[in-house]
Length: 520
Image 1: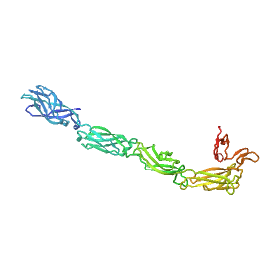
Image 2: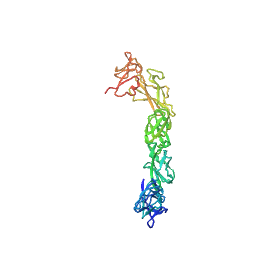
Image 3: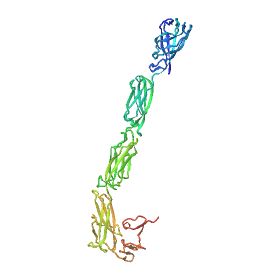
C-alpha cells in the first residue's frame, strides 16, 4: 500500500466566498506525489482519505457544512468559526477517478453542501490550497498458473488465471538448468495459456534417469510493466520409445579348420559374436556392464565392450546354439534381445575301438614262433561332411623304439594285414597304429607282439631269465606281458620308479602299472 497526495488550488482572480446558494467555484486539482507513476497499475485501497488547508479559510455564520470536491469526494462537516483559520478533516466517498488525475492538474468544481438550518452561510477562500491524502494499492497481482507433466518431445501448456486477465500479458520460461532453457515471449493481453513443444534435444539433460524436474516461470505484465513472477515445477519424462537399439547380431567362425570353411566344429573352432548398430537411447550412453549375452547352451566367453563383441575360443557344445544379445543404457532401459543362431557339428577325436597283433607264419596262421605278424585295427571318427579317416602303422623292436619300419599305410578299418617275414622270435615288437582325420586330430596306440613262448627261458650266456617268453635283457627277470604275477593270492602290479611321468612307448602301454615318483 502507498500514500498519494493531491492539491486543489483556488482559481478565482479575487478572493470570494461561496454562499450556499452558489452551486460551485473553480479549483485546479493535481497530483503532487508520486511525481511519475503508471496510474493504471493501482487502485484505491479505501474510499476514505484526509484533507487539510492553509490558514486562509474563513467560515461565516455557519451552523455546519461540507464541501463537495467536484465528485472526487466530500469533506467531513466543517463547524462554525468566523476567524480566518486552517481546516482539516476526512474525505469520504472518494472516487477511483482521482487516480487518473495527473501532475498537470484538472479543473474541478467545488460546491457547498449545507448541513445546518442557517439561511446565511458563507465560506471564504483567500488563495486557499486543499491538500488531499489517499491510500492506494496495487491493482494487479501475478497470475496463478497451472501446468501438467509431459514427456520430452511433447507440447507443454501453461494456463494463467487472473481476475484482470484481459489487461495482462505473460512470458513463460521452461528450464531444467542453465543449459536447457527456453522463453516464450509476451502473449497477447487476455490470452489464458501458452504452449511450447519440449525438444528432443533436451533428452541429453537426462542421461541417467527416465525423468527430470522442469521449472516453469511465468512473468505477468501490464504493458511493459512487470506485475510479478510465479513458478511451478513439472516432471519431464523420457518417452518409453526412447531406449537402446541393436541393428543386428552376427556370428563368425573363430580359428577355422582348414578345408571346413565356415563350419563350426565342436571342440575345434570358436565363434565371434558381434553386435552392430549399438546405440543408447537419445541423450544416454551404454556402459560395459550393460552389454550382455545369453545363449541356449552354456559356453564360456570373453567380452570386448569397445567392439561390442563376444568371443568363445572353443565351442564345447554341438547342435543349434542361439545367442541373445542386449544392451542397457544409463537410464536402465534395455534394447531387448537380438538373436543369432549357429549350427555346430558334433565332433570328437578319432577313437580306436579294437586292435589285433599276433605272430603268424607265411600263410597267416597264428604261430608263436612265426616271423610274420597279423595286425588289424577298428577305428571310428566324427561323421562330418568332408571329414575322413586315415590309418597308418609302423613296427619296431621294443629295445630300439626310435627305429621304426612302415607296416601298412592307408589301412582299412576292420581289415587284417600280414606284415614282417623276418621278425625275430626272440624279440618283442610293437605295432604303432596312428589314426588321423581330416579335421586334424590323431590318436596313436602301440600294441605288443610277444616273443616266442617258453615256460622258462634263459638268455644265452645265462645273464637273463624270462617266464612265458624269450629272455631279451641282460641282468633282468622278464615275465610275459599276458601273464600275471601272484603273491599270496593277489596280483602284484609292476612298480615303475621315475622322476618324470612315464611316456610311450613302454610304460603307458601296459594296464596295471604303478608309477611312483621319488620324493625329492
